[in-house]
Image 1 (tube, rainbow, N blue to C red):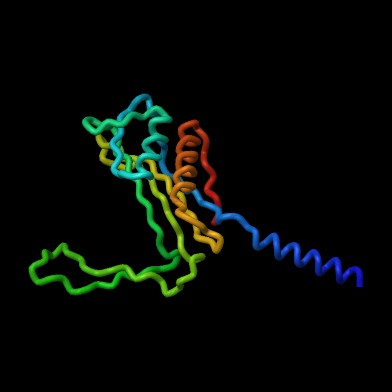
Image 2 (cartoon, helix red, strand yellow; image 1 turned 180 degrees about the vertical axis):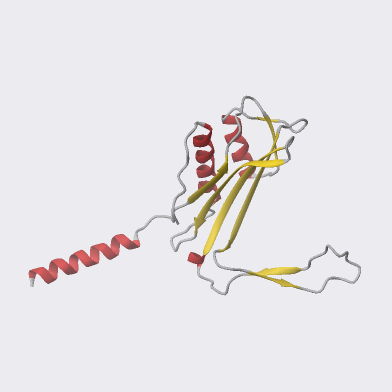
Length: 177
């Protein structure tokens, strides 16, 4: 009888602790190498809180904002999409639309479960003179049942940490999903 009581207590405690899990883990994926700052100018192609946060990170690493003659183009993008396969549904284009006009909409996967959605914050640096992307980092955060509020702030912090670590010569681990 004592064993059953202890087993029941342990089972109840483990279920309680499992329900108290924190926010979902973020994955960080990086490609390329962050260029040496040495006062190099950049033009940020994003306004708002995310752009301000990333601009602050770049300035903290020694880059400087320069809209007139930048060496690099920095781009930030945020998306909150279904983690599954989506479908693009084509719609008829207007008769006067050019051949390049593609009308349609994206249809999400049928699940409405928040756990099947990912928020993704992407950042890239393009060398303007060479016209090629030289660095890209993405922070991917699955939604969880305990989500609250906007995930962008925490994701921007993780993005800045990854960039600072790369600038310091560390190789950021790609965290498993």
